[in-house]
Length: 347
Image (cartoon, rainbow, N blue to C red; front, top):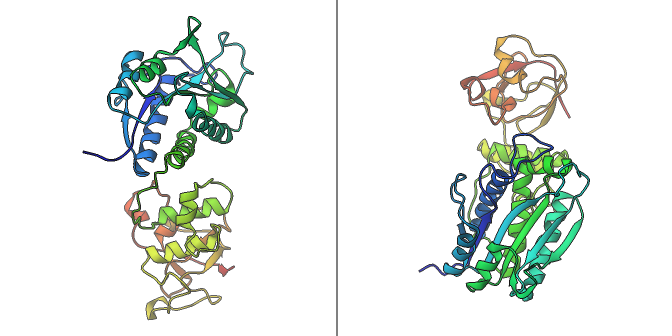
């Protein structure tokens, strides 16, 4: 029998329920199902056992059965994921996130407060507070069926989270981007993990060229890293992710020494401006010829900064084509061979 703490995640509604008026073709039921998938992955990686009420995007169980599932499987937390809407969809200025907490689980308000703060921070909008709502003014019964059935069955740590208003253009646009949903999932999982004292499962994850690209994007301010990503990509452990870390990752991936520049092999001799494998360089002359196509389509601007993994001597500098590779491009031209580039200057 598993000794892991169990959490039930409920992606609200059904697949095409509750359209996003400002962004046609998006629905609350679909986006919350995606968010639930990201959250499940983050929680499982941290050591929880996770049950979802909608394993398939087409699933749409009753509200009572969703909450009862959490009670039946003895979850320590039932979290129903939603995005809010105004009654009049033409009222587009209303924004902010809120949490509804079971009246039978008021002792769990600190967790609700922290989850709400994390969501508002990621979505960069205001908090509408942690709230309670009763059914027919019955002080002992929750209004929302998913919360009511979970709490009545014994899972009193039952919450419904509204992630902004999908009737608000800014909130709706945010919720349509998968990377934003991942950020929400990471933030919520981190709060839950700390609250229940569950440490992430330790595993050795090899560093790849994709990690180097992520480090470069973070160093350039184009990517926001989670605390775990930052710790893993800070290879030289100087407290920040920089281009230096990206360089080290590339050296590791290429089988070179992870620290300092490796001794050049005879066929990889320094040939121009003391450029060696491991250096950051700038290309000062345009590409020419079909041999450069795979590189050029990913580095269209002359003066693109590059990191040298290796090169061979000759007239000009012969770079492996994968230096210009786009991580989504799997063509053979981008994964083998060399491209000759003149006008290489070390920076």
